[in-house]
Each structure stands twice: as structure tokens, then as C-alpha cells.
Amino acid sequence: MSINPSTHDRVAQLLGREPRGLRAIAVSSPGGEPMVIRVASLVDDKPFPTLFWLVDADLSYRIDQAEAGGLIKRLQQRVNSDVGLRQAMARDHASHIALRAEYITPSEQRRLRQLGMAEVLARRGIGGIADFTRIRCLHTWYAAHLVIPNTIGAMLEGWWRQLPVAEGGVAGSRSDCGALADGTSALDEAGET
Image (cartoon, rainbow, N blue to C red; front, side, top):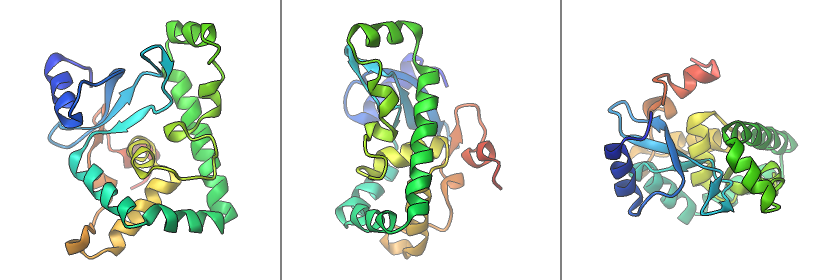
């Protein structure tokens, strides 16, 4: 979805501030409400490794609650004890780096080289994470997951499904959340049903 003035204003309202580096709506709700935005990789003349930013207030709140309840620590313990999860996370980061590189414009590439920062984005994964075995922030993982499914996003959805509805649990998954900017479901894009 392109950024017209009303979309820009809605994103600003959702963020509670003027959006910086806003490039596109990556995922929207079935009603057309922005859920995830795509951000430029160079913002205010500095590298900005967070490609996708979660702007959906309800999802952000649910993730805030999960993080406050210690979910990052519990998920990190699972990751630490499972080499398969760590390998999957490394693949997620590599895919994200490649996708981000596709969106970097030639002028941004030139400026990043001038700043001596061209390699920074090639070494930083989802949300700018340098250590590919660390979770750090569920918001960044889930924003990226809504665009292209990833390990931590799937773990978060699994955790939500286990909770009673009264405690923030959900019966569905991201297929209930929204659509990619081209109107397809994130599940369709991944080849899942």
C-alpha cells in the first residue's frame, strides 16, 4: 500500500508521533488498517536496521504484556537449549538481511558507503540484532513474522494459543490478523494453508 497523506496521518496517529523513514504499509488488517510499516534503512542520515515496525495497537499491547510477564526469558531459555531453534533463527536473520538489502535504494547505498556504514546492515538481522541467537524484542520479531513467517513469531503465536482467552489467548493465528500489502495473506505467501 502506497503512502498517501491520510495513510501517513493514520500511521502517525498509531505511533503517537511523526513517522520517520516511512516507506510503505507492509501488512494491513482486513479493514485496511495499517498493522506493520516498512521503514527506510537510512533514517536521519543514520543506518536504521529495523525494516518492519509493528504499529497495530492491540498487538503491541499484547506483546508488551507478554514481555512484561517474562516471555522473552522463557523463549530464550528454549532457544538456548535447542540447536534447531538457533539454526532456524540464523536462517530467519539471513533471509531478513537479504530482504532488507532488496529495499535499500541506490542513493541509500551510496550514502551508507560514504558514512562507512555499508556493512552494518549486512551484519544486523531482525530488529538490528547482531547476535543471531538472541531474541531481544518480540515486537520486531512479530512485525517481521507478519510479513514473512519466522521462528520467534511462530513461538509467540503458539504461546498465545495456549493461553485462555481471558488472559489474552487467541484461537487463531496471524491469518486472523491481516493481509500483506498486495492483498494476500502472510500464510498464502509462505505456501501454508
